[in-house]
Length: 250
Ligand SMILES: C[S@@+](CC[C@H](N)C(=O)[O-])C[C@H]1O[C@@H](n2cnc3c(N)ncnc32)[C@H](O)[C@@H]1O
Image 1 (cartoon, rainbow, N blue to C red):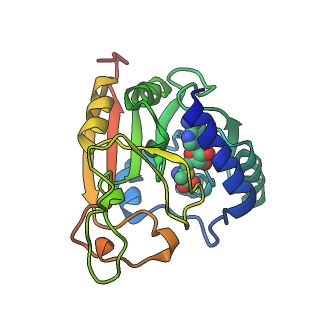
Image 2: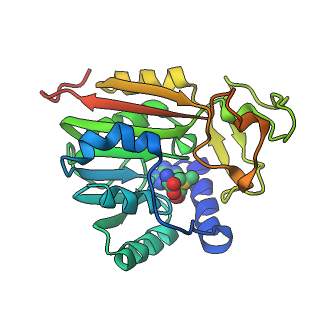
């Protein structure tokens, strides 16, 4: 594990231990996720969720049709907590401690690999990430990513106007998270343009089935209602890709 990834893992362990408050309320997928995953979830897929975080989406996926959800996260603190929450919820979810890439699961084990909502920004190598996702998907299976739009980190969070932060660039390599409301405040976040991410997925051998950008962020940091979130700018995206039936990688 490289030095930045190790430091980020410590930031997440600390956040889960001291400052992170797990979301309350009924776990639920977003409406766009329901729309895009409806047919796949109807087949009762075996789901793998790399970077499963607080596990809320795993419970929602199990309730929406997944046969089993296996979450993987490198924070031992959250793996312990999510195991406890899944048992309490009676959901068919289990958790493994593991780092992406290098997930401790066999090739082609998943009907659906589900990830995102703050996952890609922790990846120092987007091609290695995409190869790992493709490795886990069985032939004919799917990868689904619902993620923060790479442009989101450019917007100021002002209530009455929106500006591009002078210290950020869409084409930047990384930045240090300075949002006090974010659990892993102070961690290094990596930037990947939408084009770079899509190309990595295609190069890993998956076929893109759907790519869409949305104005709504998947999460409003600190509950902020910023001008940047009022419908004119991209703040999240969804990507659905499929592994070819013969399992041939590009
Ligand atoms: C912003 S959270 C989001 C996760 C999840 N989508 C959620 O909504 O809770 C990011 C998670 O990724 C985990 N993580 C970051 N980098 C990782 C890596 N290389 N391998 C495994 N887990 C990682 C962190 O521990 C954290 O739980």
